Length: 421
Ligand SMILES: Cc1cc2nc3c(=O)[nH]c(=O)nc-3n(C[C@H](O)[C@H](O)[C@H](O)COP(=O)(O)OP(=O)(O)OC[C@H]3O[C@@H](n4cnc5c(N)ncnc54)[C@H](O)[C@@H]3O)c2cc1C
Image 1 (cartoon, helix red, strand yellow):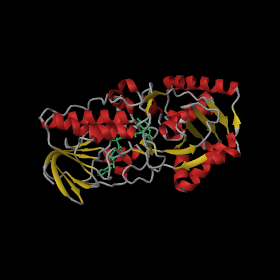
Image 2 (cartoon, protein in one colour):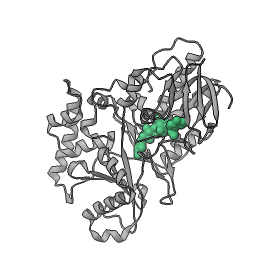
Image 3 (spheres, protein in one colour):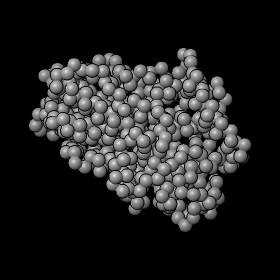
Image 4 (tube, helix red, strand yellow):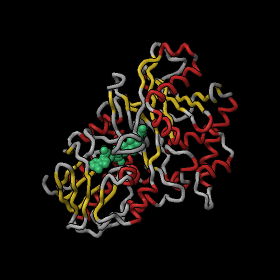
């Protein structure tokens, strides 16, 4: 492999975007990707249902600031606005009363108010919720479904720094396909994990099973979990603050359980949101029949999602089918077709859904935003400013960091990292 100006580790949304900025600036680069495809957590596959299904990201959040949205529109792709209101709420097998639904909507507003006014040393969202006596359904979205974490593991400061993601859209062709389209013209070395990064040499040297590439700088877009598990051996060790930051940004979990439902719509409309609240946060949310496809897409989040992953796909599929039959009756079984369960926790090169700061550790994101020795730069969804955890945020982070690297190589004094958006 030839020496280059910049090595980009990872060809997800952040890495592909960084590469494009480097190319536009006339810098030489190589993108090294561990998996045998580009896109990372953005991945559309037709393998399971014969239609595009997003195994990773699906919502085009913050569409008014999301460059993928404009690209999908320009390409004539099918886009659908989606409001995030719960249309059908159940407690176990029982449908919520109108009063309970109204209480949940009020609780949503109350949660925003509590967040706004939060003061004090306890940085856990669970402490905030305890103060507000909120209906739990509102908190389910705030916690496991959005952040991929249970409330006692979410930092209030981190939660507050995340933007409101309205307006939200879906594309029928798939968000993963959109990212693949965006990255199609970027040269990427697939199936080439970076094993070691040396920075006791001039610049950096990145070692892979296929050889070593030397460069002036490296942009690392691997998730903090991949870095905490030391999949990349940095030599010499990175500063303690950076290593601690990997551990202070553990991955939340979101698991999808799509189920094919044939020959009935169960009285539901396409894109309805259905939430089943259960004990001990074993909650499940369904996106119903998106684009009028024969699919109900179940989602579980937080600790329960890790537990279900550990139990395996068969257990996951039984769980989701049983919950649907609890509500719509046993006859539904004859309408149930294919199903699957996503497994991002078991994906070695990702290890979860997206990062969330530990309570008290929201500053970890700022620590990782600082380059090491003006040569090792980090980018990705975990460093995406107000659009943390999103695919658009990852792209904006990749672009911002690549611009920072170009300035560093041009000899400008390294400025503090510009905001990703
Ligand atoms: C189930 C799920 C649902 C989601 N839903 C949404 C949603 O609806 N909307 C939304 O906006 N976002 C959503 N997200 C989040 C979104 O997918 C991510 O924020 C985004 O795709 C992350 O991009 P990234 O480039 O930062 O990281 P990644 O996509 O993880 O890219 C990093 C790349 O680095 C590679 N890599 C890792 N280690 C190495 C190594 N040592 N050498 C070489 N390559 C390496 C990985 O293989 C990977 O391809 C979801 C994520 C999941 C898992």
